[in-house]
Amino acid sequence: MAQILGIESTCDETAAAVVIDGLRVSSNVVATQIDLHAKYRGVVPEIASRAHLEKILPVVREALDAAKTSFKDLDAISVAHRPGLVGSLLIGVTAAKTLAWTLAKPLVGVDHVHAHLFSVKLETDAQIPMPAVGLVVSGGHTALYQINSFLDVRLIGATIDDAVGEAYDKVAAILGLGYPGGPIIDSLAATGDAAAVKFPRTLLAKNSLDFSFSGLKTAVLYHVRGFKGREKTADALTPREIRDIAAAFQAACVDVIAKKISRAIAMIGAKSVIIGGGVAANKGLRKRMSAIGLPVFFPLPQYCTDNAAMSAGLADLLLAAGKISSLDLDAITYSQFLPESA
Ligand code: KG4
Ligand code: ZN
Image 1: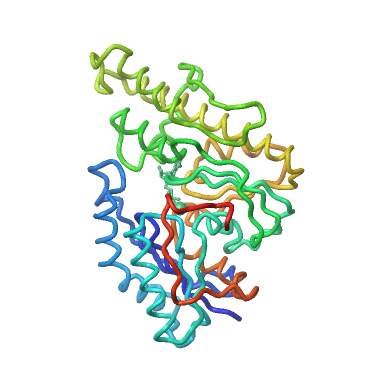
Image 2: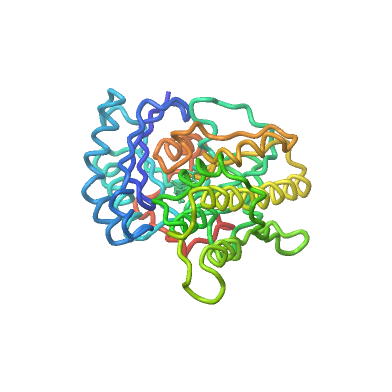
């Protein structure tokens, strides 16, 4: 039985978790920074790293206490060390290295995006037919993968501009709604009329598995404010118009995602689909995917957004495969990140 402590600090959640045998989550603590970033309507890197520094030790302590375990009973320390914001990553990576060194336990560096894919296994042990098409949709990522196993994950498509969660957050800002925008737009969309406005679906080249959401975001902006200037703002919209725009925007996002997944299924001969990341909580996406014709695996709601249980779970597989990191493990940022080298 392997008991692994996971640490997560790639973006704006400070998290720690204890996971047994890769699947059983004995604790999952997440200190969110949403309130700190809400007034800027996006993550401010400097604020994020300071908050991680304050929270990391209490969060680790809480995760051990909630799991009723102690440092000496851990088999390994895992940390999401890529990709992310450098100041944020450094806090988690430094904490994990320090613990691994002082406790003389193995250190396991985990790819945060691969961990989002693995999150569908947590507490379900879903038997997933492979190869699978994997999709990670979050505030920072929109990427498609061919998954032959959770240790053999290949990037086959990615956004060329905004991540889909980022588009949700920006559209929410255009509509004068709160942050993060995803859950707000998702619930407004449920009561809106998606056919009331027609927004573009950007599919790129015929066989492309890449995504682009910036045109859709700009289309919403022009629809709300008008083309020529700033005569109109979101204040001029009625609640009904806001609901309709939310529904039409969500329909465009979900359409594009479903089409790209169908393309990827055909290209790799996939037997199932795995969807992880914050946007995997989206009700419209879940509904649409139920008609895709293959088994589709989503994480439990608490494992959609950033958490440390997903990296501790994946670390169990890495540890068993002997993929242990050295104490000079690097924090790797988005810009340094070359997913193909994973
Ligand atoms: O996975 P996550 O916590 O962070 C990153 O790794 O980026 O995802 C956060 C993102 C935010 O952009 C948020 O607006 C979006 O996930 N999100 C949603 C929903 N819940 C969260 N987007 C659409 N529908 C939702 N229900
Ligand atoms: Zn994430």
